[in-house]
Image (cartoon, rainbow, N blue to C red; front, side, top):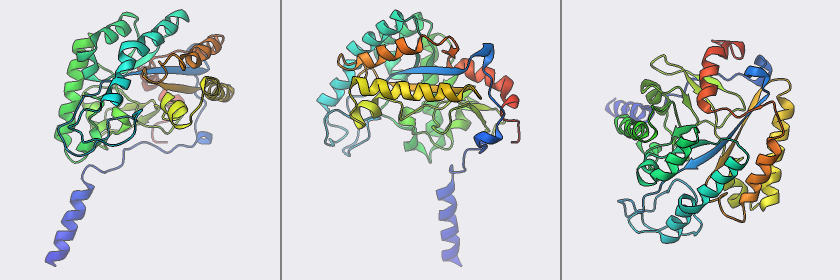
Length: 324
């Protein structure tokens, strides 16, 4: 009996924090048509991830730095990885400005995400985005620290989220409204914590082309506005090995098909970009060609995630009724 009690206790401990997030499974045929405001058909969010990596981490073990490297091989966390760190820094020094110039050329906005340390260490980049009036989404304290590391330490996870939001407010001049975890490695507590901290949307989930509500333990609703790991420069260039024309083809194909479907029910499309990847001179034309292509569509809404979340909180019952 004593052994059984020990086993039951261990089973209980391994399930702490693992209750599934509460959101409905509502297949497309069971949803009402989604009608974006002002006759818009498709939402397009071009996401520029403004991320910062610490040079080292206090561990002798290899660690996941919150994104792939350009040079392979695992170094201990406490050993400086020069080629990978400076490759990423290229995006902060050069690539992001190349991207900003294109967005300005086409008079189109980007919706940005920001590690708190990016705001502290590379303030000029954040100031440039704020000056343009672009959305900035809180994106963890630093890219090299994953919330998933604190799956069984909710207090520590909350501490990181709170410090991220504090820096965000200081740097951006307003409170954050939404969240994206580094490498999307959230925990099953993250959505509850961000709701309790006053946020209204999450971008961590990858499972839909439309927004939907996530229930939280506080009773506050969080709108899921999914990010993408597929329509993403890392996947397109680094994993698929596409060239510039192939990358434009991926973006155009995704856009065209979603636009086609949106004639019946609204969709959104997210493009995930990283300045050290798409911001390279030999890749940037893919972004230029895509911006030129989509600019011709006057029924595409270049919305911020905050605008989508605020609109959806008021209108979700016309799409997926409460209790569906």
